[in-house]
Image 1 (cartoon, rainbow, N blue to C red):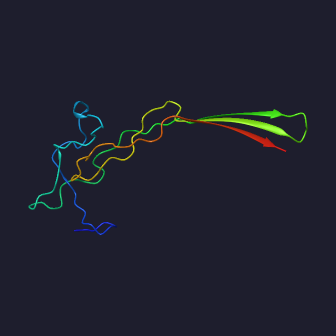
Image 2: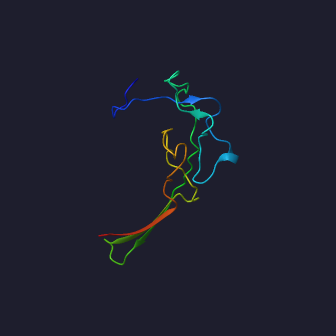
Image 3: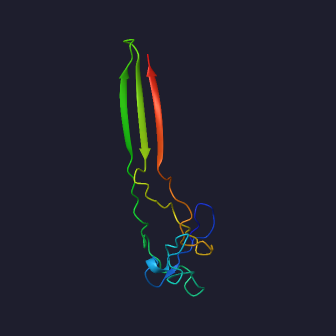
Length: 127
């Protein structure tokens, strides 16, 4: 058994079909990996049959935008800048990593997401 960086043994699961659950079997929170096809290793086959990179995460899409406007002030040496920045303009839900431990009850589920749409404004006075 090959220990990982924490010293715990690392086991590969047995895969007996498509590891990604069909859309009809996904609930909330979203179960992305199938419990029926990803199984714990047995004593007969302790190292499992799962290969590397057998499943891919859903795509990550994010569009960011910024707008800047400079204003000249009556004094020649002074200027005011207004900036608006929007992160994740489309407000698409992007899932963070899922629970990879098959022994955990939350196995194969996405429990967290990346930030939703964020907007920030700034004023900058230069002199």
